[in-house]
Amino acid sequence: MEEQEAAPGSPDAMEGEAAAEGVTEEEAAAEGVTEEEAAAEGVTEEEAAAEYSWPKLRFDFPPRRVYHFAHQFRSPCSSTPAASADNFLKGVKWSPDGSSFLTSSDDNSLRLFYLPEDAYSTAGEQTAETAVGGEDSYGANIQVNEGEPVYDFCWYPYMSVSDPATCVFASTSRDHPIHLWDATTGELRCTYRAYDAMDEITAALSISFNSTGAKLFAGYNKAIRVFDVHRPGRDFEQYSLLKGGEGPTGIISSISVSPHNGMLAVGSYSQTTAVYAESNMEPLYVLHGQLGGVTQVRKATMYYLHLIL
Image 1 (cartoon, rainbow, N blue to C red):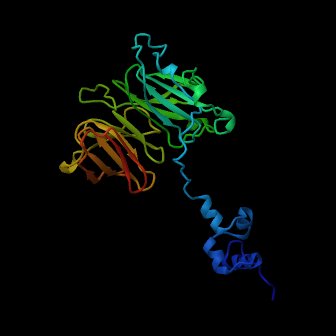
Image 2 (tube, helix red, strand yellow):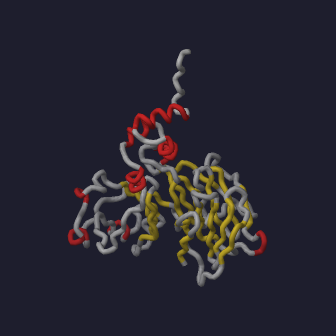
């Protein structure tokens, strides 16, 4: 009788491959990998577990200054000469791929700084003595002016500097629609507009992409509007947060979407934080007890929230 060869990836094939490697069938099944994958990795199970463990934090060593940026935030944006000379930095957010960071300042401007190529090597380090009081390490690569105070800004969650199509960030400012900016050119790609009962543009107070980047959640007064990222304009879904009588009232100051469980957390200046289902905005939890308005809310893990009052 002619002998048939076991199909690649079948139980018989994996058993033969495991025997060739000197491991039991149970060990190979537990690993869930083929002989080629195991050989390519060349690591034991313990080494693989150690590779994905949390980094060791050394709080006994003070942080070292690598780059510094000060002077360009102490003078107003050149495109807004009427702005106050007492300009200051209001916020900063890292890009998802770690290649850059975005800042917001009191001169109604957003500045984008790309890290130098040697940023993560010892060649890029500077001492605190040479950095303090000196010139800025380098200037912003891109600067855009909103014209009005910036309420919030956020990165597209899959932003990667190697894919220019994903290099975008959103911002919202007073009396303006939500803007989607190109992080490579500084050009405005599109806008997302919401209107009030008088058919006038109403500004979002907080914004956040969902975990897939397909939706843009925007916080307003006692309401959330959801925009389809691929359909700019005035089309949106609106959800009142007063359903059940326990939701946040007043201004929605912060939105954070969890990448783990399809939930989003909403903070408000009314001393209330609530958690909703992303799919239909059904209220799941309402958290009370904050002593002041919630200015920032962040989903830390699947089970924890970080609040800044």
